Each structure stands twice: as structure tokens, then as C-alpha cells.
Amino acid sequence: MLICPICSSALHTEATGVQCAHGHRFDRARQGYLNLLPVQHKKSLDPGDNAAMVEARRRFLGAGHYAPLATRLAELAAAKTPTRWIDIGCGEGYYTAELAAALPAADGYALDISREAVKRACKRAPQLTWMVASMARIPLTTGSCTLLASVFSPIDWNEAARLLRPGGGILRLGPARLHLYELRQKLYDEVRDYQDDKHLNALPDSLQLADTQTLEFRLILDSLEARSDLLAMTPHGWRVNAERRERILAEPFEVTVSARYDWIERR
Ligand SMILES: C[S@@+](CC[C@H](N)C(=O)[O-])C[C@H]1O[C@@H](n2cnc3c(N)ncnc32)[C@H](O)[C@@H]1O
Image (cartoon, rainbow, N blue to C red; front, side, top):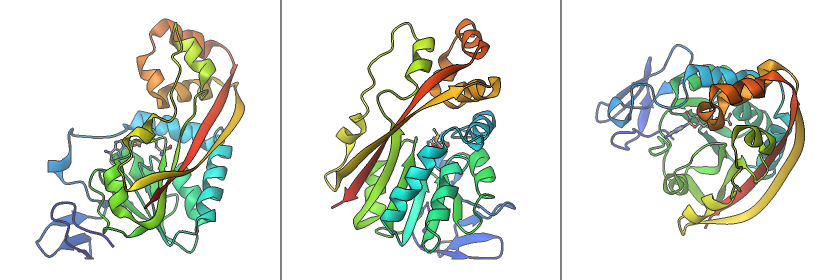
């Protein structure tokens, strides 16, 4: 199923990695993932989330704060009974591992452009094929998947459509309008209304929204670690000034977690 990210020909397994007929070689890291991101496709030395962001997300998710989101994601994926699936932008693999547990008979793949993320993620479910790769050039054959997962992540819709077999789809989990509203109130003078369906405007003709669900619950951020990790793992945290940051860290507060699940089908 794997194809070369440089010339798109089939990749064959070798002792220390994979290789295509044109001699392009890619290593398998000691942790087990494949490095399928050639240097010429990197826009920076170390693309994607850095180690600090990955660790913050890992602690926050590991503490179970978003567990209901992962459970619903896995239920929705299992209901689609995919034969081959991939998590695109898998991060440190929290949601990927839930998907893998819910889809034991399917052939599973996961990728992220961040080596720091994949290095940690691959330990969660060694039965999957883990890849450091770009979502703009996914090293899998055209029409090879019946389910793509995209969780709080950007996505290249055209590349996603290429991977999908007709009737297959993208299970996208993203923030809904009220997601982390109380945190945003603390961060900004004016909380802008968040339009949670604007990603749908970018869909190519080959993809169509077939179903949408939301899941909402309240979360008490009672530990300093939870508040600090949540700040570190969201773009909000990078923009906050020192005074507001101190105020947010100072005392427990409650936030709304509100997520939207879209099933976007390949025509
Ligand atoms: C907000 S994180 C979400 C991670 C994970 N899905 C989760 O929810 O825990 C977004 C992820 O997208 C990855 N990413 C960003 N641009 C990418 C690209 N072009 N190709 C692959 N992954 C990318 C980042 O490295 C990061 O791990």
C-alpha cells in the first residue's frame, strides 16, 4: 500500500526501511515508525508540533480530560467498519490508539509531520504503520482507504479525496462554536464568534458532508498542570501575554468542551 513520497512508485520493505524501484530509500526508526518525509519536502528543519507542545498534549489527554471525545470518535469510526484507515495529523497518538482498539480487524496507518509526535505515538499501538510524513503527500496508493480520521488537525482535502475509495469518508473532529469559550474569555478582550463550519467551504466537488454531530460537556480545570497544559497545547496559549497567563493559571475554572464530528463522504 505504501508509495514513495518522491516518485509515487511502490515501496518495498527492506531490512532497515523501505525502498522504491527508483532507489529512493526511507529508514525505519528504532522506535518502529517510517520516516517518509524527504528533506526537500520540509519547510523547516523540524516541522510540526515541537516536543514541548507534544508533551503538554500527552499529559492533558493522558489525564482523561477529553476521554468522552475519543470514545465518541472510536464509536463513530467502528460504525463505518473500515477495512483500511489512516489518522492524518495523529499527534502523539491518543485518539489513534482509541481508533486502533475499536478497529482491531482493519489495516491501520497514522501520520504526522512532527517526528517528536510520531516517536511517542508509535508505542501506543505497534500494530499500526506509523509514518513521519506530510498530509500534502500521503505515501499511500490512490483509493486505498475507506476511512480517514482528522482530529483537531489541518487537512489537505484534495489529497484526502485521492486516498479514499468512493463511499469511504473522512471522520473529522474539530472545535464547535463554544469550544473552550470560558478560556477564550479570559484570553481576549472580545471573544470573536467562531464559525465552526468554514472548513466545509474548502471541500472539492468529490467530497460532500453526509452527517454532523456535536458533543458538549463541562470540564473543571482544577489542577495547575491541566490549566498550563491546555494553554500550551492550543494556539491560544502561544499568543497570551504574561499577565493574562498568570491570571489563568492562578485558580481553577470550568470550561465548555464542544466538538463537532463531520462525516464527509467521497462521491
Ligand atoms: C492540534 S495537533 C492534533 C494532534 C492530534 N490529532 C490530537 O488531536 O491529539 C495538529 C497536528 O497536525 C500536525 N501537522 C501540522 N501540519 C501537518 C502536515 N502538513 N502534515 C502532517 N501533519 C501536520 C502537527 O504536527 C500536529 O501534531
